[in-house]
View 1 (cartoon, rainbow, N blue to C red):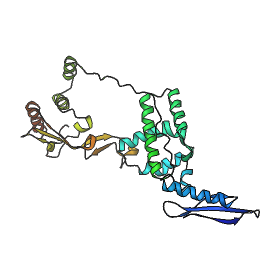
View 2: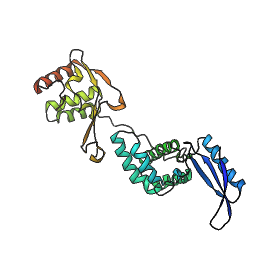
View 3: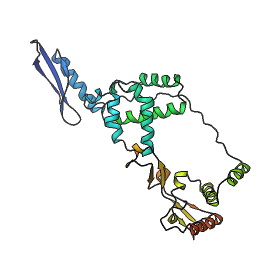
View 4: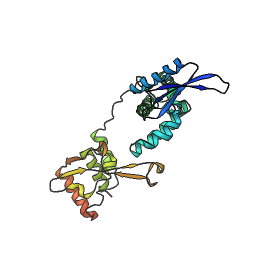
Length: 280
């Protein structure tokens, strides 16, 4: 339970400091007041907010948004390297210039709406605004959990409509032109496999001989390769091979006899080992 105590300030005046226990059980101050009644109201209010899950240590909320993101959120937020790279760019380009110097517990919905309007006025495209707002929401969702603020200012804020554009589907004639322009049979086989399976490039290029069961014609997709900036690579490289494909779920396809025959011939021609890449 909280309490208030009497103290004498530097001018000899009587003051009352309100104290309460935060979510970790540490005694912290809720402020100093000219009357005991005001001090009691302060620690009682602080205790109510803790019970409602609204606030932890008040000093944490005084961090600037930039400090919270760079010191607490970004270093510990678990995401894919490619996502981390995208987050870093969006933060630097669109979010930190607007919110960076503001105290995190003083950012309110009206500030977020003003930020969205500013991005729109600058000519930022709706998909980019939507992505930036989603990232801001992610940050504040964790900030609420971290008890640095009890306000989620991005919740409910609208962004410009993102139109769904129709996909362009090439005709068989257009495909034939592109297919015939490929430099060799291996390139053509790569394209044929992609069309039959619908694999993404990062999954297709990471296929290995052991992923194909020639007898059953079953192809298992269990890895993917992604390209990242060197500063987001664990060892400063360019590519990262993930031990799971897109959507984090292994997939299996039964290939046509024609494709399997071509793949089998490709393997024989390349004289690949069991664990070697299928397409090299």
